[in-house]
Length: 519
Image (cartoon, rainbow, N blue to C red):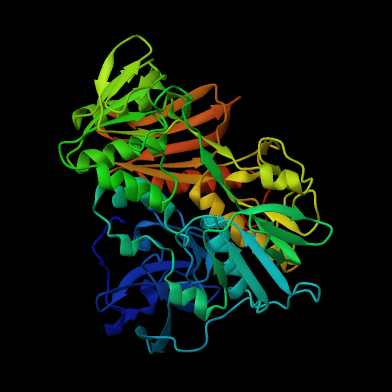
């Protein structure tokens, strides 16, 4: 689930020279076998844990910017003074460590046992009940953040899924590949919801919203009254209307239940066809190959990922799959499936024990329409993630928000964006008035090759590649009218962080230009 890096540097428990700590910077080291970052900021010394609380990335390999540090794996951001989370996908803060100065030496020996600094706020007097509709990252992040902000009122999470919120990116990666046990997949166990007094209602679909009466209504007629409401219903996979694609061995991959069904049929030696060269589709292809399944990919693309990364990077990823035994049938579409034989539009046939369809998703907007919320390729929200109906917020795949960089309304289907929107929506439900200015980031991993993408380039007119694509160590930068819009890296994690900082610095979203994670 992460990439391990050896913990190194001086052992702070044995002392380090005060002169060895940068006057305004950070020294990476350890306390015995635990990674620790020791910083001097405005003449004061601070020590925090050096291992990211998301997937365990070593922050020593990350990027320090001002009073923040960013993880090289998935770009979580933390405060160097307090260890507080400043940006998703991390949900928990870093440990704080006690710093002691003894003459010319500085020692870090034990964790700081003082109460964790919190940002507790008093909820507005009219906020006594909050309902979160959805079972993904946005709803979970919102619930988690509300409690961390000190909200102690009634909170209900209503999810159509039968399982608690889970680490969705892993469904098409390690979990599907069989290298991550199911115990790793839930974001939190059942005890968490009980201890946090979060009423988690699973297997319930909200069918309507009575905005006037401030009530969400389920399919069975159960009413969920609210003072603030989050809509985080996400997207639904696009399915094929062609004959035969409603069979039990045809799958989409969106939920833990979907992944379980695929795994049950993905026996070694089975024949799978993946329809679509989307991220879900090709991550699933790589995961199925790890299980010894024969995989063919059908796509109407001429080069996989060319629309996202351009033809050169797309060609590299296609070659990576081919080297791992995947067969591509490009510029082709599926015509029909009889349960065993898949027929393509040109008459070619493929034998298939199972099919995974990954041809995109559509935002779930029907519920919003029942409340007369403005909808246009998603739910239109303002910079505070509030919809056209006051007190109702949206986050995740369904939220179409004003992009602070381009000025265009955008809808981003990234896990980190969903988590961050949930966090910011929570703050705004409690009256904190925080603008959503997050720079999108996503990652994909296929056959152990991780690609990290920061920014949002809906279009570009120039790609500049630094490095050798075929060697698997490069950065591709995407420009529109001479302005950098996005950056994709393989084997250059720190460079991707530096591009993130650059992309942030050219915007007008924050005055300090350090960690533009709505801190």
